[in-house]
Length: 449
Image (cartoon, rainbow, N blue to C red; front, side, top):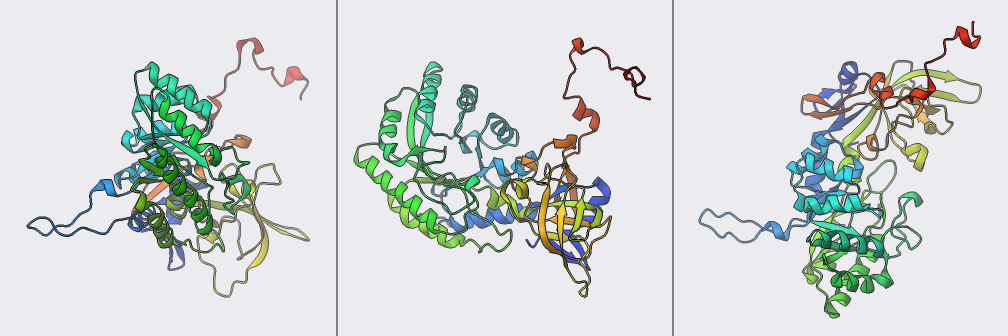
């Protein structure tokens, strides 16, 4: 568990605020984020790639490194797109990796400079490409020849030049869950390695296109270094080959994918990762970019829920909470594990027992944990799902006409609601009934007593 979330006198705190205090103020369920955890993860990543300071160059003895020598760290907005979270990262110097016009608009609204925004994604629409051109962003990561041709036509028609990186699919098994692997040849992402030179040549020749470099991303939640070593090695070789053919390659976007600890995963060795990147790309003198998302946001969040009832059956114990798969879909979608933290620490003598931790949605898949060893829990108790800062709120829905849950940001001893819980009226207002359906029929007229 991240240090910003810790027990004090038997109560779980987020930084300087008791989680139970927040629950009393906003109700449950809710997402809870620690600003200190976001900042700590970002600074940890940035420090791994910080160049050694140069010798002092002024009378005051100050040493520094030009920003141009530092990599561009583009936070992957898809991990957690709340405007307050984006503003926090922007304030630290982060850019943004976006995959839709909506995420582009969010990044800009949060104050991310356009020159620090990268637009990725396999299915960019003409409208989205036009939005990227209008915003004058740092780079568009192109993933197919049709997309490249479409972008060329749009840019040339507007007398613009689009800076482009060709996303390469290196056909590397990342060793992660099949639904979040993106670097194998059967995945929909990127251009096959054996076609990369051909497509780069096309990009260099098309009007309205400035071929700047390459991009790669092989998957999410990677906890071993070897898949990165193989993928990055192939990209480095491709840089050399392209330059040998006379094509300039100024930039390489190495994507994201670094995993975090949910359960028993090994701690990712960030320093070894940084050394690998330096060894491969420092001799090539390319500007590097990264797209971390889960690594920056995941450990910084909890989903807090209240127990509705404990249902004892002959063969199983069901602990039913007021959060559901529509609030946190990762366990249902990926069989993902999230540590379960009682908000009040159990007594040492309290013996855990197996239980199924489930939500109220009418799906058997609405289960957070099967046969999990849980402490004694009673109706009204509060629990938290750990490592829920990434791919939690952003993947939530209103299935079963359940309201989206609020998001709360803690900083020191203060907290703020950064996404409020909507009302049922606002949920219903999204729908409209056509006039030709007429007025509702009264119950008595339907023969209902």
